[in-house]
Structure formats: structure tokens, C-alpha cells
Length: 148
Ligand code: HEM
Image (cartoon, rainbow, N blue to C red):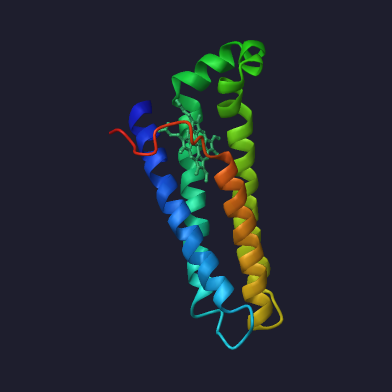
């Protein structure tokens, strides 16, 4: 069970990154104005945000079933002293939570912008921030291709 969720979590990471890049490119295209936010970038930002929310939920489930985190919960002192384990118990979830917040806030404040240029600029900044946090939180030391 946990190995299937881990493989799914590993796979969905690539969709999150792809949707982030699409949302960033579409937001950047409109920062000088003349591009309708509602018919282009808005949809890309929503798809990116939904993919991050899905990945976050998978992460929460994985946290509950993973042998690594379950063992860590049994002895938090030892887990905190081991940087490899601490990464999955603290750093990874915290960075991803910040990434989810940045992506969600980006979509909300972009929609409230006074004009299309402002909407695109706000979306670009928020998505770039979310992407940076997610890239920083991904365990790149783990396999890049999921094993089902
Ligand atoms: C956008 C959000 C996230 C991304 C892109 C992401 C990405 C990843 C990746 C690529 C791995 C390695 C998979 C592998 O080794 O095959 C991983 C492992 C893991 N993630 Fe996430 N993650 C995210 C959010 C979360 C959250 C919010 C949590 C917990 C609340 C979480 C918990 C875990 C755990 C516990 C592991 C390791 C499990 C194990 O090795 O047994 N993840 N994550």
C-alpha cells in the first residue's frame, strides 16, 4: 500500500512541475498588458494549484502509512538527529506546505488585480515562489522515475 502511494507521489511530482512551468510561462506572457488573464493564465494557474493540492493530499496519506515516517514517530528524538529522516518528517512537508500556500495565494490575489497586467504579474511572482519552494523541497537524492 505505502509503496503504491510512494510511486504515485513520485509520479505526480512531474505533473506538478510541468503545470508550474506552463502557469509561469503563461503568466509571464501577459505582464506587459494586452493579454486577457481570464482566458489564459488563470486556467493554467488553477490547474497548477489543483495538482499541488492533490500532491499535498498524497503526501499527507504517505506520511501516515510510510514505514519511514511511522518509525520516526516512534522515536522523534532519534529521527531529529538523523538528517535523512528529519528531511521527510520536517523539512519536506514544511517546504511543500509553504509551496501550496504560495500557489493558492497566487491564484487568489492575481484574480483580484486591477488590470490584466497586474493579474499576470501577481500570478507570475506567486507561481515562481511556489515553484522555487517545491524544487527546494523535492528529495532529488531519491529515484526520479517511480517504481510501481
Ligand atoms: C508539492 C508537494 C510535494 C511534492 C512535489 C513531493 C515530492 C516527493 C517526492 C519526489 C518524493 C520521493 C518519492 C520517491 O522516493 O520515489 C517524496 C517523498 C515523500 N513525501 Fe512528498 N512531496 C510533496 C508533498 C508532501 C507532503 C505535504 C508530505 C507530508 C505531509 C509529504 C511526505 C512525503 C514522505 C513521507 C515521503 C517519503 C516516504 C518514504 O520514503 O517512505 N510530501 N515526496
